[in-house]
Length: 314
Image 1 (cartoon, rainbow, N blue to C red):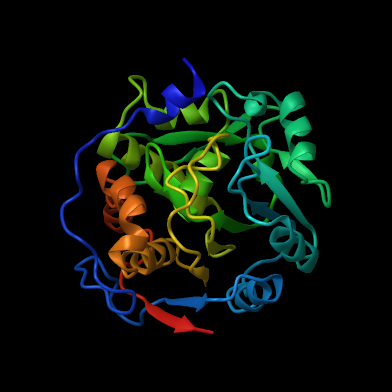
Image 2: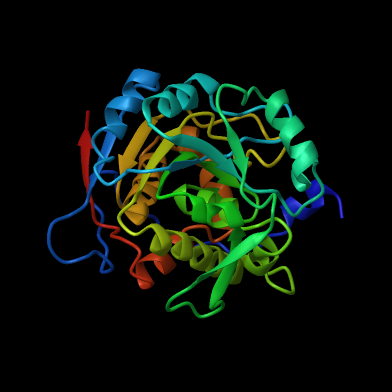
């Protein structure tokens, strides 16, 4: 199966309803009590990124894994490397982490994956391919599809995780936020990613729910020692896993930071949906044609955070 054929497998059903504006979410799934804060800056600079990170890093300590998507060779829509470089330099004992992929790609095995890292400029700090020496199983509590997921074995070497995410579209998930970054991104290439896709290469809600369950395993593993940064820039309908991703038609929006994975992904969606129709038409079509908003619904069902949040603009 060719890479582009692999990525195009998806359900075509349209998700029902449109979310509210960026400031107020009408959702029965919201947690009781104080709303989680999602910090937001319209400036996409290293200084802005660090300012937001310092507002949500209170439980980050010890050896820190920075989970980000390093991309296919010469990926057209990758985030500027200087953002991640500044973040990594600011976090003591930190290492960028990745896992090998399942689809045909130079990133399918560790040797050529390491070569791709050099091609894409990830040479300013160590990058740990976490499944280079195999995988470990993390339990999944309360899921309806999986009871465990195989993640890169080196995940066990880290005390904390900073999830640095390029928020954009995705051929199967509709959109890729913090959830997709840790679910697919931490799953081992040979085992975990196959578990999340399912034995019959699930699409639509089945795939989305398996992906959410994989993300829940990583969240539960780190507990409070995990935090999230979403960068809404170069918002293509395609993921960085597509070496020929479509040119973005959605304008850059800014950076989000939170300790609540559901709140930050919800906020990313709300910011996109609040744009004029001429600016968000393509990305909305991608999200809804893949039933992508179900990620948020199922995250709420599994108790992974709150869809009702306070947006704090910095």
